[in-house]
Image 1: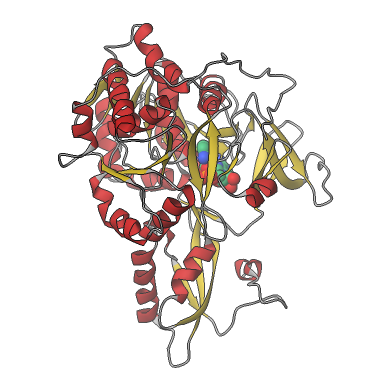
Image 2 (image 1 turned 180 degrees about the horizontal axis):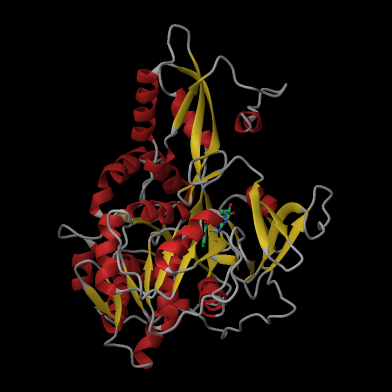
Length: 522
Ligand code: 3UK
């Protein structure tokens, strides 16, 4: 099913019949005279557009020589570094499908994605070998090619040295499958959103150029990593679309790694998430970096509380443009803009996208009423891989069910009102209550558990657990601490419950389903 949505006001972007998108993002810059310009800065290196293009071609040659065929998947568990660019674009240029994965996950998630994707190859940064090795051992069918980005004679870095720096892009159309991104599901199984060649061009133009006003002389800095759709746009596709420069942080985001990079490279566009804006505001009492070179600050991933925006402006003189995006839409489709900010809202429609807010009766609600947000636009995923049922439920007649409840006012501003499922956004990253509950009940003392989102002192959501213990166990601080440690060891680091309540029973429906909404209102 290929449905191209048309927007009455904004005509769709046009693409040539042969459109391998790597040509537009990588090779074009050589012809346009940017070969000597820096495309990527890292903490200890810089890569010009000419070096980038040559290494992308070397990588395409290396992947083909390893035996990868068109349409096969290469999973990437790769930190933010130039090799991420080489693998991603080298694969695309060769018609191979790159699938960047969240590098914070545990082995069981990787094992699931290895099997679900049927990937032929997996490339990873050496720092993630612990979880990756376990996953390769656990997977039902391990990829036939496993590749470290660096370290060792058979690493990607060595293969690149042995490969030719010229590769002719494999022909493709704008509507062909190009890359995937996994998105978490409420039952714990991630779903691979299949994106097309045109999708990155659409987001870069519609949100990047037409909404955020990105330019060739911009320097981009994203706290969100490249494996998130948000970071992928912020720090790779947007700068490459306009021939600008990206600054990559290979470490965990936070003042210790970000502030020195910001001081040194003086980014003009800054992309954060609400949790980090709040953390930096706290940190400013001790250390306040110069941010005067920033043109625009952006926030996404979860709603930006108006109070954080107000304090950020007070402290820095800068506004933050909140916008909502998703993995399925690839990037932001409703946003505040440099000339139009309404604090506490997600702003207005990005050009090229349309929205419907639908009530329980299936009809559009009136302005001022809330309902389910559906969107359409030319960057939305074609389907979920191998999951016809989820595809049919989420992608209906070219409209994408965002799973969010929204309200539009008479001026066209959209306000987030919550999720229609139980999924949580913690620090802008998906978090399934079901996954945390499953971990808790693996503990010897736990009989059952329910997890809900609770608003913290910054007005941001964090997981809270309600735990029923097995007979003979006492709910005390020591056990709460032990359960917290148990979760931290077995889940991605941002997923552990910040509060643990011991209860004698959980509220349930007649059919035994946990009524999380009753716990939320406690
Ligand atoms: C929530 C927001 C309120 C919302 C993303 C920018 O977050 C991104 O993608 P994900 O697939 O999550 C999508 C869901 O996250 N959300 C995101 N931004 C906001 N809620 N206000 C916001 N500003 O529930 C949405 O359905 O992880 C963000 C660009 C690309 C992205 N993929």
